[in-house]
Length: 472
Ligand SMILES: Cc1ncc(COP(=O)(O)O)c(C=O)c1O
Image 1 (cartoon, rainbow, N blue to C red):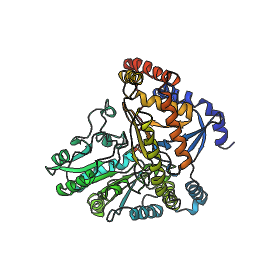
Image 2 (cartoon, rainbow, N blue to C red):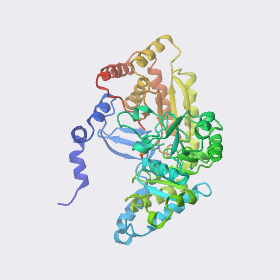
Image 3 (cartoon, protein in one colour):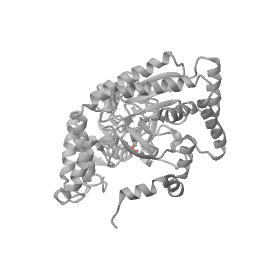
Image 4 (cartoon, rainbow, N blue to C red):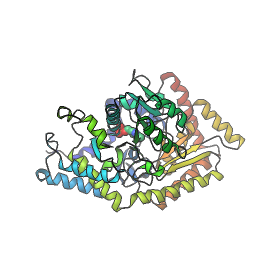
């Protein structure tokens, strides 16, 4: 009998959580059970997922933002099937001691979308690997060691990118990391100048919109940072791993700021979410400093970096993004969603702020107006910060079949990073779900039962130090 995927899934799907409990990550399983996210999804398309009972969910997390074209985008699925069918007719994969035709084609397409002069492309397999690459490139190109990053930054979780993580919780327990890193507050040009002034900083790493908390820099900050980096000879590295490739209503989110960085890191959506992939774009001058001699021609490389399926998926993704005009759609639908969610603030004082660009949106909660509501808010906060947002996310899932995430450790922020294929009907459904959920917060009842459930876990947790996950 040959391999039968359909049969395997139909036989084993029901054992998924047991398998994970035994062989993968039982702590994660426990957390999913605690917050009621232990669903068993059996299918999904575009921006929806279906569970085993046939219930459909609106997916506003999109695999941490990878499914910009939606799940199973026909263009990428078609391109991958074509590649697999071509088999021996496709230029051979991973020859290694050749130049891969497909990676050359994808590099050309990416360079055409980048600011002028950023036409050297290095391929990776993930976001964190793109950041590791950029760390090495800026150090090698400048012959300097130090790196500057922003408070609350998230650039990945391998040891180099972890050294640039602005949330200390992620670093705990992993020993000493890369030395010579300097953290500065977002928006503070004076602090940045102080860090750069000695001219010993290789790179300044930033997310145009921070994934943790969906924080936007104040107007003009990135232009000031650009000027400071140029003045002190520091290379400016844009982490566009989450914000890039159309999500914010521009191909790259730094385009909103009218600046051009020196290096750009991308990943996530580049393959339509179907194959791990990433890339770093830089100037040829930077690239040449790394690969400066024949004996150093592969001094930085990765076995799977230019694999055929990732390259094919990348080419199909870029074409579909353009043909379906999804960047324009993200801007239009995202603006509408931000406007309508912001409109709920007048009715629900639980909402402190709605912010974002395109389809990267943060809804921040704060202390409400009413006395009774204030008391409930404070009770949750006393147990642990972030529980209110978690309670809202749980209710959105349970009562409205909407999949969202709390955006960071101990923050009262829900983040929406859905597929760029979302339309006006989904905007109305999302707004109605937030409206109903926040309305239920004004009453005693099931939502506060969820709150009590979370409080009891938060209290118990101080013993065993487990935490509700802060999604990336
Ligand atoms: C801004 C940003 N940088 C880097 C990363 C790390 O990417 P990966 O998880 O592919 O390593 C992420 C992941 O969420 C991210 O959002």
